[in-house]
Length: 475
Ligand SMILES: Cc1cc2nc3c(=O)[nH]c(=O)nc-3n(C[C@H](O)[C@H](O)[C@H](O)COP(=O)(O)OP(=O)(O)OC[C@H]3O[C@@H](n4cnc5c(N)ncnc54)[C@H](O)[C@@H]3O)c2cc1C
Image (cartoon, rainbow, N blue to C red):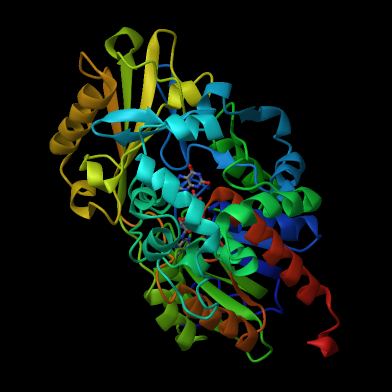
């Protein structure tokens, strides 16, 4: 027995796969592998499965500490929900949630949803609207020249579209900085539109036809959904479906035996334990994947260490309905950087989904920090709550203090797909080739949204399942 390690398992691999991390990426991968009849165990350091997905009930309200909804962008999402047995729990966002606001000159302005509304909106000046007519004639960027999204949007659509359309959305999705996010890595579909059609406008029209053929939906038209019991319904169901999910198990090292199988060492309840498997999927954040992969794939480690995660703090606030003047008829608002607000954006959670607040109350979910304002994400509770309450007074006409607030801090929230990201991911892919049976599947790769994580998990389960089933001689 190795000194200091109890329960050292040196038998031929008892498990086919160990998945490290029980966020949606790891759980959906494990679920896919288990459905293929493979013996899978998930090890996760936290007390509950779900990773950043978490639903909490308080005083008759239901709120999220991570993602509030997912977008139905691919049929793979519906298939997974069906297979996990929670399709009847699924809850579409309300009709009014299709209205989204952007703050302009200190007030929330509805984003235009039709050509007529676009011509009338005060969000963009007449000059900015007229400038759009030039877009189809602007030269495409050479395919091999990486560009930041801010530069891309200014070049193709003009400065106002960056300030009042793209920058706030970038903050809403990535909590990111448009001057650093890479178009091909973070917005591959925009990149593909320009490369393929030479124009976003022409590409949007022609691309819609092609998506219909593939039964896919663009992110700007896909429907948002959650579950009656919140987003955690999905990850809880996946964990039940996998069966062998061990919480409180922090994986501390990874090594390989001469036969190519893996030894995974983890700490649990003060004990150091090992598991042994033919393959390992690392579904943990990039810095943790870097640390674990170091002995096997030092090049991937260096690439993973370069991926940054800015902090985001969520403040959930419950108000009496009559204390908020704004009708909250929408999904919520995003606050562009140029408006200088304390929040990145606020979701009108009780308008998005039924059953989120008790009768006579409303629930707001506020996002603070990100690349734009990392210091405020770590401000102490009193200062944070005062800054958020001031925004409610100014932007939503709150006339009394919130009934209660809850704060969730994510010191490392969302991976940034910044310039050079695709090169980093290429090095991770090379490590997968060099170390057969080792896979990296988490939100720093292939998209950060819940839907992207599900699609990537599906692909990982499919390819790893095929590899494990292939005759040994074929490897
Ligand atoms: C605040 C916030 C709001 C968001 N809002 C939305 C939204 O509205 N819609 C949307 O589509 N997406 C949203 N996202 C993005 C999306 O939720 C995430 O990208 C996705 O859930 C990440 O899943 P994951 O499994 O890749 O990683 P994670 O959820 O981070 O899971 C990683 C897991 O690894 C475990 N782990 C780490 N180290 C170890 C170790 N050494 N040993 C064992 N286990 C370990 C952790 O405990 C964790 O469970 C949001 C993200 C955040 C943070």
